[in-house]
Length: 97
Image (cartoon, rainbow, N blue to C red):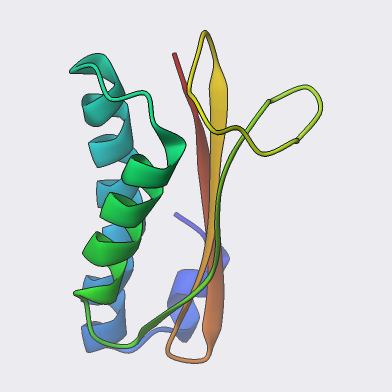
């Protein structure tokens, strides 16, 4: 829904869908018992890198109050991602509970 999407060509727009897919995947992994931030990050990075035109700026799993990176997901964790799709920088985030 971002206005930045207007900067994407059709191929880049298709690749940009990987941001939402990665957020959904991380939530599902947590719900299925994954708690290791490193494993979840690796899965997110692999999913994003599998799409053309993408270049990851960051994937962060952190405490939503302090923004300190976490090693283990507990009660609530903020997942924040920034990815360049073509020349456009897209960001997204979600709370994992």
